[in-house]
Length: 225
Image 1 (cartoon, one colour):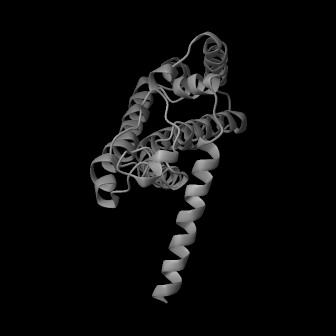
Image 2 (cartoon, rainbow, N blue to C red):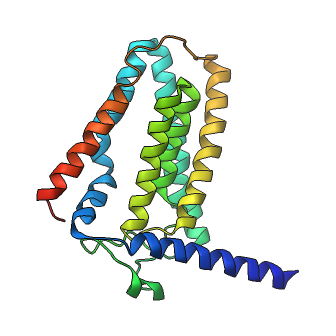
């Protein structure tokens, strides 16, 4: 039994490394800049502001405050708990970490290698935590498709930049799903169901997010990391 589990673990580890190297190995100067900007959390601040705008246009200030508090709890779980508790416990070196034998095969951008450990990925858990929570709250198909696509792009950028394995990202997504589901359940129990049929300006975050992505794509022609 132990031998079979060991073989399964080794197979999963091999697949994990293979997927990472396949993504990380497809690079050029242009996409180095694109993925660097995509991965920058501050670049997406206008989209976060657009999500806040949608909340303010459709809900009372009391509900908006409750939503922001709930999101804060989600981020506390997906960011602080994972980085301060889970990562040191798992202690898996990032692929680009110089102490990792794999680092010689890893393409890094601007010598950025992240911290020592990378499992689970905070980028994955934070972005997917937001995507899941707003999907639960708004329940609109195309908004959910956009948020999931945005979160997937974030995950891809982390492998491209050489700072996370695929497994780091997958575990981060699972943490996000668990955290956002529990927090949304508590939120709905305390504040009551907040599903609305007619939501104003619902797709503003989508258009703002697409505009940001377009700016990234164009500016990366001239900007090099």
